[in-house]
Image (cartoon, rainbow, N blue to C red; front, side, top):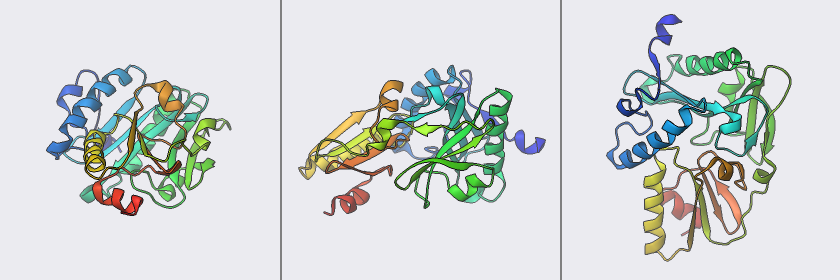
Length: 251
């Protein structure tokens, strides 16, 4: 296990500028998003935010933070919240996901945390960790909103919950409305694409920047960097491209 541990690296204030951030590693159109993410991450590291990745050019990483400072509408006492656990392509099947998740669990134990939690779903959805994999480590569903579920591994019997406002799942507008953060490097490019498409097709659009912890905790739906409403109803956490947007709007 030590050999595998040595293959990983944590992002720190000292190495942040020189390290890649995995998910947008090879795509120049997302470089703006990477730069924005690094600015955001620099402020979060001091709060106990962890970004741990494989020390190779690949999409293999885990990202988590204390629940009190996690930019999501989830509440709990002394928990760790996992934003993202991603192992892609040829890196799958080598135990990297297991190693990263166990590192997070052990880190939480060493800090005297009450447990670890993560957003998942009843059926596999893009950009969310697979429920069956997470359950293998003892995580259980502790709260749910529609198809979305909050899974937790409790060390002391306490449980985190979705914030009350997250259960609203509605927004008082018929416009295409998107809540977006800056944590994911893909988001700035997605926002540019959506703005261009909506302008060219005369689609009313409202973009709401979730640029503070307070705003993130108050989002009126499930949120993990991105949330889309249409005709007043919550639709998806899926990052939108032109094709997905056409299908959603039935154009």
